[in-house]
Image (tube, rainbow, N blue to C red):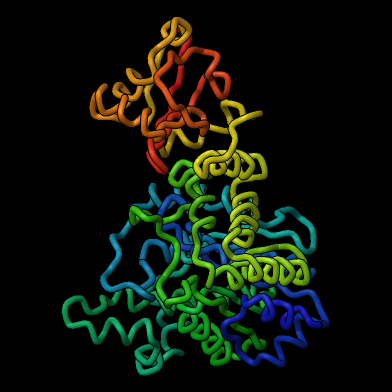
Length: 427
C-alpha cells in the first residue's frame, strides 16, 4: 500500500491536487514538504495536531518536513474561518510566539541536519528583503482579483456586510502563495499540507507557481477536527481552548478531554492520532465497539495522545489522577500522581502537626466546604455519602497522618462527584 493510501486509510487526507501524480511522486522519491503555522498565540492547540500527525507520518516514510513559522504572515492574520479581522500583534510578541512554536514542534518531529530531518524557517526572513512594489510586480500581477475572490475564505468575508475584509487580510492569500513558490525555489519543496480551511491559500500557491513557470507543486489538506455532529472540537466544558502548552492546559485536563469524547468519535480519532500500525488501531476500535461502556477506546486515545504531546510520565500521572476521580484505589500513588488534581480541584492546607494530632472527619468536611455545617456533615456521614481516599466512611472519626494517601495528601469526597484535596505542610 502506498504512503498516500495509508494516510487516507487513517483519515488524514481530506483533499489533494493531482492525486495520482502526487501518489507516484511520494512513492518513488524523497520529497521536501512543508506546513505553515502563524504565531498568533503563544501555543499551538489541538486543531494544529492533525497536520502535525500527517507531517510525522510523511517524515517516517522518508520525506523531509519544513516547518514554516509565519513571522511575516502572522503580522497580517489569515481571514480563513474568521468572522472578523484579527488583532494585529507587535513584532516582539510575534518573536516570542515563534520561539514557543519552535520548542513545541520539536517534540513531534525529528529535527537535525539529516536528509529527512525537519528544519524550521521563518517567512519574515525573506519578506523583509522584498520591497512592496517589487512584490506587486513579481507576484501580485499573476493572481487576478477574480481568482482570489472566488476562494471560500475571501468570499465569506466579502458577503459579511458588518465586517467585510480589509486589504491587509485580502493580501494574506498572495503572501502564503509566495511562501510556497519561495520554498520551491530555495529548498526544492514539492508539497504543502495544512487543514482543509487552508485549501484556497495552498492552491493559490500552486497556481502562482504555474503562472511563473516553475516545476509542478502539490497541495494536500487534512480534515478539520470536528465531532460526529459536525462541531469543531478542542474546547473544554468551560469553553477554553485545548492548548498544547502545559501551562495553559494541564496534562490532566488534556487527558480528561480525550477520555470524555463521545463513543461515535472514537474510531475516527484513534485512526487520526494513534501512531501505532493501523492493524493494531483497528483491533482497538473493534474491541471498543464490543464493550463501549468500558471506554477502552477513550482510554487508549487519551493515553496515546497525552504521551505524545506531554511525554509518557505526564500521561501516566494524568491517568493515575483520572482513576482517582473515577473512584479508583489510591494505593501505591505518590504526590506526583495527585499533583494534576491540584489544578482542577479545591484544596485545603493543614499543618502536619494538626493532622498528626487528629481532626474530626465532621469538622474537616465543614472546614473544606464539602458540607455547609457540622450538622450537615454528620448527616452526610451517617447516610454513607462520605469517602476518604475513595473508601466509604460510615461514622465520624478522627483523621490523622495515617490517613494520608500519599506523602502529603488525602482525598475527601462527598457523594459521587464532589472532591476535595487535603494537603499537609510541615507546620
